[in-house]
Amino acid sequence: MRILIVGGSGYVGTLMLPWLAAEHEIRVLDLVPPQGDYDHVVGSATDPAALATALEGMDAVVHGAMGFRSEADKGQLDTTSAFEVNVASVYATLEAAHAAGVSRAVLIGSLSVFGNEPAHLIERDVEEDAEPDATNLYGVTKRLAEQVGRIAADAHGMTVTVLRLAFPTPDEIWPRWALPILDEPVQIRRADGTPVPALAGSDLAAAVSAAAARDSSGYDVFHIVGADDSGPRWRTDKARDGLGWVARRR
Image (cartoon, rainbow, N blue to C red; front, top):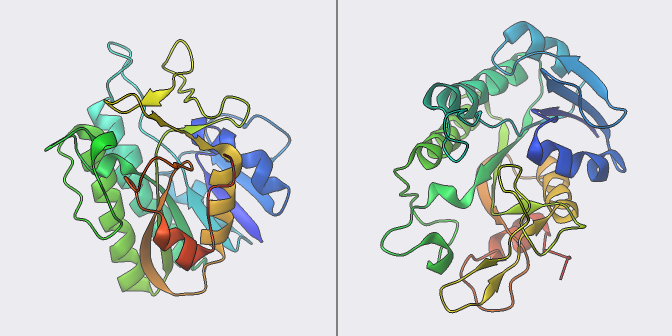
């Protein structure tokens, strides 16, 4: 399959590119070059001309771009870029894909569409059909991105698949989480000390590959998280049944 990765030079894109390239023909749309020898189109995910060029000849598109972090506070998203990249560029990508005749799209979402109330997210039992309730900037923009995906599926008859991730990380760091804004990889733990494993890049890529090939048309959403034997906090039964995906890294 020929797959365009929008934002393929970013953190999540870099995690999955090598694994996807082993099975698919990959092209990257990004303002900066990807890490590796990949077909690269220089451009923004909000630029219709760049999107049209990048989508030419593709079978599917994966939107993995993220809003920039604020220079003033590296722990906070910049409001303007968050909406521009997490929402506007999703809309632009899906409209350009429809115009180019690319009917399959995968949106890299986040479990952060769920908030930290009435309990912190890692303590909550969340299923795919639960109503997202995040009110912080990142969570709100990812919620809106999901709605953009649903609208495109309904309006254009596209197959749009949202993958809600939690703590994606390089395989060599797993089960710890290695986010670029953190000084060192961390082991996420629940309040009782139970470790919450991160999502290995290889498992992420397997989910993306399965989502890009999903047979059913229309919109759907799946939770893609690290294998967790401590209890069904974040259910992945739907990913197993609908995508044939389970986290292999244990």
